[in-house]
Length: 407
Image (cartoon, rainbow, N blue to C red; front, side, top):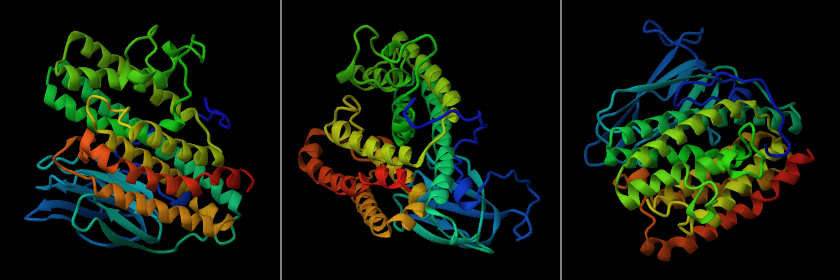
């Protein structure tokens, strides 16, 4: 377990795709019934988000203003191949999301209880990616809250985000195993690309767990190794395991064997165990800052070089996920950071926006995971540009841990 964290009671995780920010926005999952209607007295407001392509990719939001309280978002992809996810944001924090939205699939929903304020519906890949969304009603003021209190609230909200990502990863890996077991190579490749971002969002937070009965130095019991080992750090005494062992069979060998099925089953077992352990973590603000820095270090050391996805070449999927995970850690700290150092906070936010804009240029609905393949030609022409922008983000971000630890 990483330093600075202590165990907290096991919590029940939410449904697939729903991420709530309890501490910062008063959000909570809410159950709804067909008879609920929109009102400001505890009833549910309903918002439809429809994804289409009629010559251009559109993300249509049925209404952009609702009263404070529970809000259910129903997302339906009718015909867009460029838009595969929808997120509800507030000040860069993800409050709810749905991913892997293929055209023609049944509508999906998520519900969050929202306080008054400004939000955005984010549809990456749409002609207009951001739609302003307003919630009316009383906003709980944090004007008199200390920086330390706000940072502590942020860590609690971030813990819910991590829990949700790991829960969603379990569902994605179970789907991967299902298609591997069925011998469906094409579907398994798609599943692999869909599952990878969940781990890459939070890997710096969940890389310290060891199975019972093993020493921390024994890779045979190290969950991070068993889930995410690469060819470059292969331990011969343990052998192939995890995501990249499955990747090698699917993309290099182009075949599903009995060994592939066993590896996929082992991966499922390990991520299920991880999901049971992750809710026992408790975070300090510096953990979030250090974790964000660690994710960007992963970008520079493993993703840009093409080392991470050596067989599928979906490194840009992982890279974008690392940046997004770092952005979430920063966003949950941001209210407290703004009180501590508004200038530094603004610098970091600006660099995150520039990095996201750069990565949006590599989105490609026709490639696995929704990003361009990181082939030799693209890497040769673009690696330096991406690395320089990530470094521009790393520089101010590296100052956060000390800043929040001394708040």
